[in-house]
Amino acid sequence: MAAHVSDEPSYGLVARTLHWVMFLALVAQFLLGWSIERADGLLEGLVDRWLGGEQDLLVVAHAALGAAIIVLALVRLGWRRFHGLPPWAAGLSAFERRLASTVERVLYTLMFAIPVSGLALLFGSGEDWDLGDRRWEAPLELADDEVLLAVHIATHVIFFVTLALHVGLVLKHQLIDRDRLLRRML
Image (tube, one colour):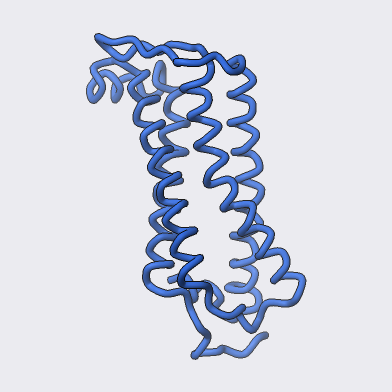
């Protein structure tokens, strides 16, 4: 069991806030995306009540949140670039440092790739959506919507595998090593 280190450097308030705001935005985004395909059945009453029965308005909200996630990711990268990171946690092995670094790079990449692939679906598929009294037509037809959707879903699969590694490493240190690694981000 690792010794408790009370003076372990932590991430600053802004970095922690940006991390958890991104977490909440991603949870909201995944729930919103999940609900798009379920608006006809499971969520039909909510769509009728809140969106006047226009389930494609969920697509608009999903795209807007995706664009906001891109902006938030840019802010996070900018903050990190100009303010740096605290030193590595003392309890991390060399392998865990390499793993954490790789996982972090993949997660940052996916913070852009997932919403960009979704926006490509919206703007580059040639598809159209019924938005109540309006109709949205994708301005470009860069690729078939099935191909773009497959790319969008593939980025999600990579995200969830990478997120499992990220959370797994933190939980290992929190619950097994008991070195309070999680406190650095709280």
